[in-house]
Length: 232
Image (cartoon, rainbow, N blue to C red):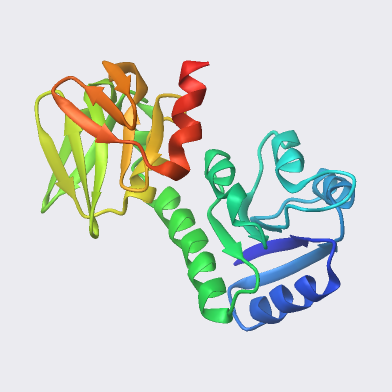
């Protein structure tokens, strides 16, 4: 069961999200919050699994509110403004729904939450507790242990992701978004819809290209701000 609240200053947005949520048996509605202050007060007293978060709200904007949370629940952004998508993914949101959105798109976002929760529950105990410098990757029927510091970059390839290390390339049946979530957030940076890099392995940055040893990774327009922050 996924417990959730809606944070939005528009009543019609609450009506639509709750209507869609009521159609799903695994969704449990908890509260309507019409600004971030109401949400903070609610979350100080209650725990939820998911927030549907609008961005353009009075008193405190959506992302400003999100940055105040020490251990935020999973977040699905619901907004009419596409230009804030990059910042949202930097804050590890699950999905970014552009208003107006239909039930099918809503369901896709909720399914991501379900998949992430299931993946977290199924992580082997030794992967969580023994070390944070290693990762087991499943390639075909084998589980290959990879030292995270040896990963140069990861690349999306359809329903697969290529994990390029110093010594090898491992292809796994995972979406790049799921792979990024499994990696340490302070060491890897998404620079293109199909690429995320290990910042410690950058050799040089030239125009819209990043050199990592003998490899060249493109910088996507939507992710240029990510790279620029490295240069500040």
